[in-house]
Amino acid sequence: MKVSVILPCYNAGPALGRCLAALRRQELGGGHALEVIVVDDGSTDGTAALVDGLEPGLDLRYVHQPRTAASGRSAARNIGIGHATGDLVVMLDPDHVFPPDFVARHAGHHERRPDLVVLGPRHRLGDADTGPEAFLRDWSFASLPPPRDVRLMVLARLGADLDDLATCWHYAFSCNLSVRREHLLAVGGFDVGFAGWGLEDSELGYRLRRHGLAFVFEPQAVLYTWERGGMTARRYADWRRNLVHFTATHPGADVAQLWLLDDTFNPDVTVEDGIGRYVAFEHAVRALRG
Image 1 (cartoon, one colour):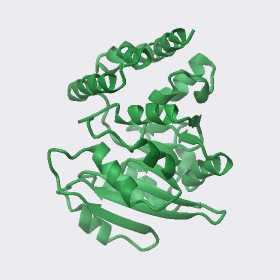
Image 2 (image 1 turned 60 degrees about the horizontal axis):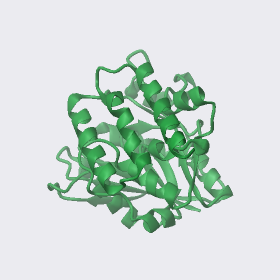
Image 3 (image 1 turned 45 degrees about the vertical axis):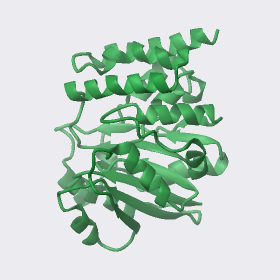
């Protein structure tokens, strides 16, 4: 199996270098091949020079896309999908690092079944954890904390596997997702009608589910970030605008229940309250199905 890793980036700086170093360290085994496609979405921070100066060891393709009003994560990932030649596509963000078996854990599931969407957890490292430069010196994943991811919390609360959830499609977060390229092409890739932050990946998950794919959450396919993002008023506004687009594109009652999550993305809502809303969302969609 050939694996294509797609990395859309915009002014990602040193974080991209760390991610590519983690990809260079991947231990695939089983005769797998790995290619990496960096889609530079109009960066102005010298991303091209950073990629040019990398050590050899990766089958890497750099694609520069000029920044326009149409730029964004959906368009950048679609460009990456268009350049991919692998059987399997793994989607990442450039601010991530991960253990040497990360890609192999994704690929293993797809070797066993061809009809999967595989997801893994993301953990934000805090100030008390190993900083990025110290981490790069020894790549000590064993010293990092276990992942804390909203999907792990939801699955624990509901006592279910991801594929058992009526709302599994919502959790197809593209920061850590893999699916065979043939399925991405069959559903038309990402919807470029989404702008800014949020829901373009969940909407892709919705179409992949309707396409007949099963969903797997692999807790050992974990990645880490030092990115301090979090929810902001601007992201919340983006999310609400994108939800209007999502519900207009898919006017069914199940998608409409996403409005139950509205306050989850309000910066003032606690994590615990947010998990409760995810559980309510799941129960609402189950109720619609009897």
